[in-house]
Amino acid sequence: MVETFDIKTKTYVAPETPLLTAFDWHLHPREMPLPQDAKDKLPLPFLSPLLPSSVFAISRLHFKNLHSHDPAIKTWAAARFELSLKVSQESTKY
Image 1 (tube, rainbow, N blue to C red):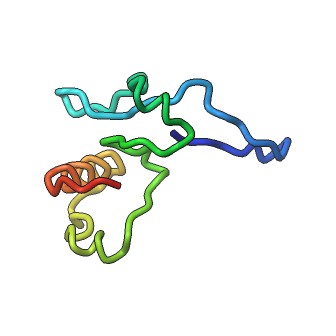
Image 2: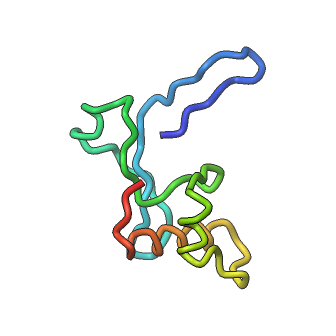
């Protein structure tokens, strides 16, 4: 769930509906409603297979262990897919 801060009014802006982001079968990112069990635990973090491209937090050592990004990748969407796939193949929870 991405929360924002309105820079003009200097106020916190809560998201209207928490969404889960994942890939569809064509590898396009899609937003879906958060499952009820995750909603019940809010504001605790929830697992999501895909983060918005502007949000990225991972241990430097773990990122290096995943072999960083492929230098041939030229777009954020492809990099986001690559990292999501690597992490899911490793079955690591963040």
